[in-house]
Length: 311
Length: 288
Image (cartoon, rainbow over all chains, first blue to last red; front, top):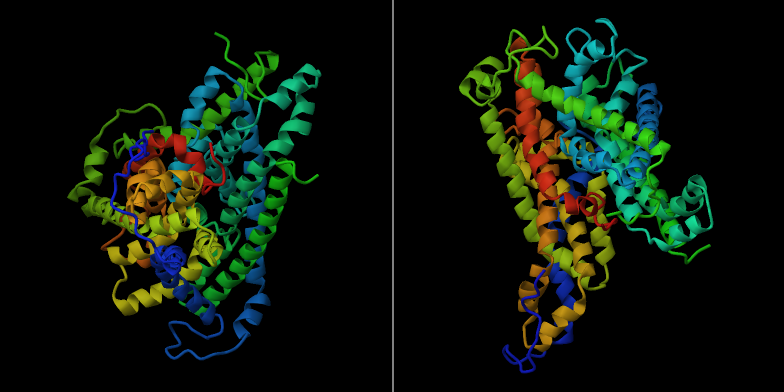
């Protein structure tokens, strides 16, 4: 990197310095942020409108919606379909996060050894992550097909094995999810491992600690903040999963894989019940918000611990 | 020459062979769907469902997908979808850069009241459920007449590109020592010139990486165009799924060819910015 404008001479080269009044100096960051604030308003407006819909009986069939108070909330909260959807979403998010974190940390540890295969794999590791999840869904959908799909052929499952039966649909969706997003955890954790100082590990080697002790007592606490960052991203994103699950199952069979976002899509876009769809999304947003606050708190604590400022 | 070992690294042992075997397993699992997509895209119509690995490869599917022939067969104009994707994503990234760079600079350089509120509001867009915003936008867009237009898509894609660019660039501006700019100011540069001549060139790698990463995520987005576009300004992600249901006929080979074409731009861009990827993917939280 070249520093083209680093002053190397003693005499001034620019025009004489003008004194900037302090009020202008104070205003500067606000002026710079102004366009972004305008944009934020442009996005918060529809968001606010969405919250407003929760209290209306808005639907395409209702040309003049009126305020109906909390009726949508109580209606949705007493609807078994919503709880089914919410339960599936949380279960899916927990399973996806746990599976991808375990696999991702494992792959990161394996890649951290210096092996030729590892160096090759590292280059292509992120490819699934960079493909649109919806395209991943399309490709896997073709592979899952019982008649001509390649998976049943390669795995010797015959032509009747259905990857999207009621009991298997979630696991098939999770398989695709893990295919896409495990590399996300792996690259983050690998970057974390590589940023660690060498000295404590050399010391533990001198002390004759076993690999497992070294990992459990030394490495894990030190890379914990990196793992948590990955977990936060994966869990929050899994709560609002849509793309690949939608193209693979459209929420089916029945409503076996109907995530909250798919539920909102069905309510708002298929049956035009805008208020019900918005209520789904409002409740999902509440779940996301509360989880985010909790996880960010955990992360802050872990970062302070890893930095050694808190026991 | 023996490489110096990193923390947690060990020399070869019996276990390391097992470890390599596990890595190869992941390698196969990870690449097989991509290989399968390429194979399927090279099959002729008669071989698309009758063979698995032995077939006569042909490139004609790509020609079909990108020509009027493909549109006639599947009612998807894929060339137009590609153009739409390029316009939407480049447009969205440019808007985000123009608006986001000053905001990222302000947040990275100074502590001011409301700074954190602005930054976290922008970040919350990344984690908000998309449909919360899409349903009202669907109605607003229809009223404004920008449903199924590039302008509408560039607006809504700000939810994808803006948080990424602002947060990554803020981390770059924070890392840059303020002394460099102060030196320029002492030298008689105005604030504006110090920013343009000193700060901006120093974060150029950050700008390039965040812009390209934002491009990838805008390109890969599906749920916004699924609902906010109709048939005229459909991007590739939506167009690929339409191949599956086109005209009641199965064109799996064409679907695979279209998927491959749609996947190439993000893959090539990703490989070119691999060094900056971790920092970008974690919104500046993990620096490598």
